[in-house]
Image (cartoon, rainbow over all chains, first blue to last red; front, top):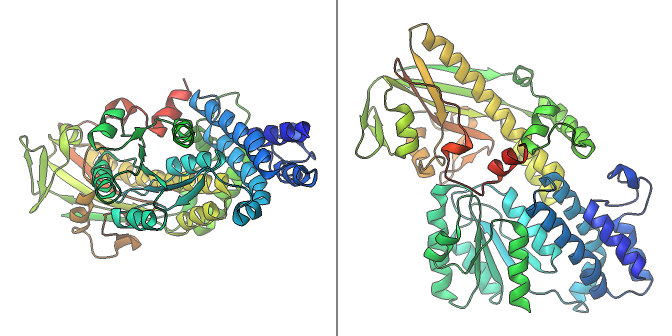
Length: 222
Length: 233
């Protein structure tokens, strides 16, 4: 059983989606994350175990490699896709409540800003960390974040910005969220954001890379 | 005021997979098998779906204010801030420009992302950016050649949203062009649609320099683009 989970984690880490996917070339015609997740369930491994002992571990390794600048964005995206193909088999268990996620995470790029690659990378890594992600997209104003919080009051919120000029909107959104939901935890990130700016606008956490955000959420959940 | 409009054929951009791989951060000797065929596929598709247009308009009625680091073009004042002001303050005239790759490539990127084909969505996004930047290069090079004939030079191009210039000022810049010009519309929060579009300012004069834009000019230490460049060294 452990062998299946190890193989599954290896596939996710290396972006092997399914048997027909040509990447990585040294795993051609071998089972990918899709087939191995299915086989793991058929072998009686609980969805929680698949999530904890394969997917989360693999995505954490991917996040660490990215932090250490050992892999490029495309490799990270392939790992996320492989994770998704495995996660598709676990979705029915999440929906039935048999398997619980660690919590909910609302994310969006702030109003005035269309850049979404960084936001997407964070969303993928947090999903790979076992959280349900509610992605509000780009150019998201305070109203939309508050509406999402109205529906998910326990969720943690992530704000992304790439432009120095849209950081001001981040400040406004943090203020609006803290006014209505003072206990809500807010993470901020993006090229122009710093730990000092995070403190200045009253956000709770800043990370320069996706894995830092995953680790912070892990702390909050424990 | 004088102006020039461009309808640019995709093949004029001379984009190739290697250029896109470089933007993705790949270095000499790296295994590119993951991305090369996908980039080729997206570039081939882009030939058929791009609708590349550009225009610049040159204005002589300009004034600079060193106190506010701003420039007034005709009657509208642009608060371009220190970095851009330093580059353009010796200009005799100012070119304002728009350039777009068309709507389709941005839409395909969005669709691929929604379908969780993240890598393809990302490559559409990067290729779309390369198209619009290469098109803006063609427009800028052509402007430079025209200006050189008059013994003048141009600065590099600068866009609202970067180097501290508030993206909201794009609303002012668009006032110099007819509505829906080149098919570009602005949202309330000053974002362009199609997303793969650029607008901006270029300084023109005998005393200006075309300094290449480098990450060292910018204060963003954790920017993903700087990270990609640093990985090359």
